[in-house]
Length: 135
Ligand code: AMP
Ligand code: ZN
Image (cartoon, rainbow, N blue to C red; front, top):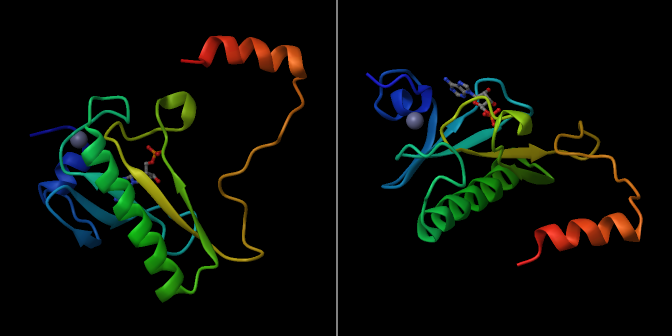
C-alpha cells in the first residue's frame, strides 16, 4: 500500500469529496479549506512536484482543469475571483508530496490568501538576479 495520502485517495482507500474526475486527474474539496470551495486538482499519477518530469500536455490539462473549477466557483458559489496556488518543496509550504494545484475562491473583502509584501531591492540587486536566472 502506498504511503502517499493522495495516491491512497485516488485508489479509493481514503474518502474524498470528488467534484470532478477524468483520465488524468481528480478535483477534490480540501479538508482544511482557506475559503469555502477550496479545491485541489490532483494528477492520478504520482509526481513529487511540478519539476518531477510531467509532460507539458499533462501540466496543461491540470491547469485547464484548475481554470474550469475556478470558473465553476465563480458561477456556483458566486466567488468574485479565485487564486491558483501550487507549492513546491517544504520551504514553499508543500506538505503533501504529490503534485497538486490549489484553486481557492476569493470574495470581495475576504481574507488575503496568496499575498506577499513587495520590496524595493534596487537596480543592482535586480540585475544580479537577472544574470543568475536568464536563459
Ligand atoms: P500543500 O500545503 O500545498 O501540500 O497542500 C496540501 C493540502 O492538502 C492542504 O491544503 C490540506 O488541507 C490538504 N489535504 C490533506 N489531506 C487531505 C485529505 N485527506 N483530503 C483533502 N485534502 C487534504
Ligand atoms: Zn502520490
